[in-house]
Length: 191
Image 1 (tube, rainbow, N blue to C red):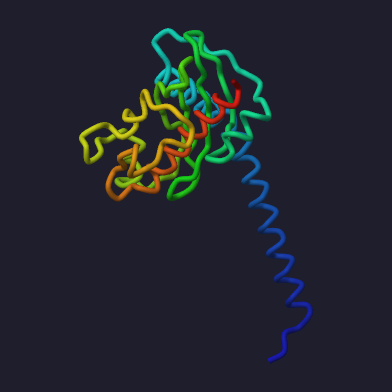
Image 2 (cartoon, one colour; image 1 turned 180 degrees about the vertical axis):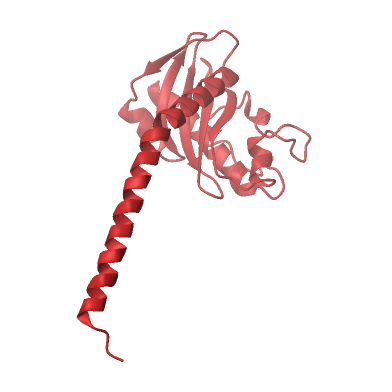
């Protein structure tokens, strides 16, 4: 069976028109939702900042130094950093989880010890990785994110040694641990 050139052009033209219409619709949806999504992300970030800092702390954005970014890169990506009015820093870190990136805020006090971890965005598996994100208790009975409070020393946080994971969510636990190590490394690199 031979396909005519006219038929091929008709199909190609139809597919091109469909692709252009879909692209235009996606552009309109993006325009309509972008500001709303950005506002939600800002609110989530503000809530996460408050969760890792002493009550009443205020946050001042800090320009990222090359040394801090490079030190954090061994564990995750340092996205932004804020100086806390109570001393120390809060950082937005992105690390790898089991289903994609985990975006978290990690607080580090003036003594270079963790003050808390709060997840801003993730794509972890519901009922498994979300147990870590939701701060459920690990096998030791400690809420998994709370166990990081007071820990220090970049690279010293290791799942199975100094960090107790949630059974079945080890990869998510490793992602959070990497984010905490990244934050500690960034602060240590700043001096």
